[in-house]
Length: 117
Ligand SMILES: [Zn+2]
Image 1 (cartoon, rainbow, N blue to C red):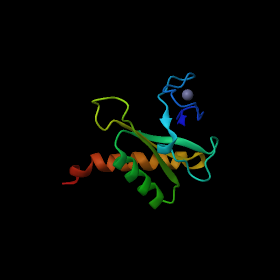
Image 2: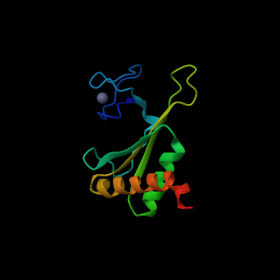
Image 3: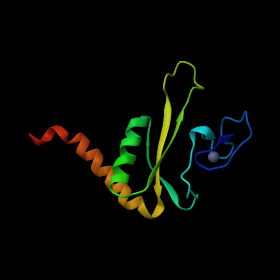
Image 4: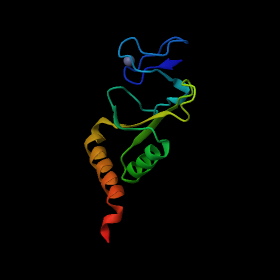
């Protein structure tokens, strides 16, 4: 079943864009939610097109005891576009502020890696 990543609505097979927000729908087999998922409790913290980057962020957050989930879509519906993918990292709402701070810290550590000499 196609699912809108924004609205969380499921649509019937064959629908590719959300009629409400025009977002491309994800196949729900690529869209596995945490067991305690609710729309109120989980919020988007980070978006990337690189799955390893999202997984690295998730592992770092989990290491800091911030619960995080990666929802990804390998999009094969655009011929010739290769491995275009949408990877989203979700955290629980109460963790959002600390998760965003943590993500910023990781990003700055990555870009600042070579500046320590
Ligand atoms: Zn939508």
